[in-house]
Image (cartoon, helix red, strand yellow):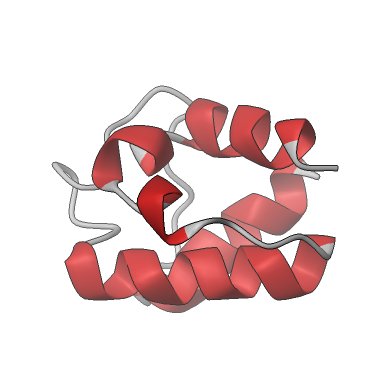
Length: 75
């Protein structure tokens, strides 16, 4: 699952290197508010779940670790 999430982050950010698990995806330039929406949509499609609009905020998707935990909680 983590590898799939990293690939999605790389595709959306356009970066070839993968972020560290605990690196802020927003501070490091992998994501911004527009890319966050794209990432959540891609995660929903890839892992077959629906994130409530209230969950689409940077705090919940700040790091790879948080994203993995979030997706695992919606499986």
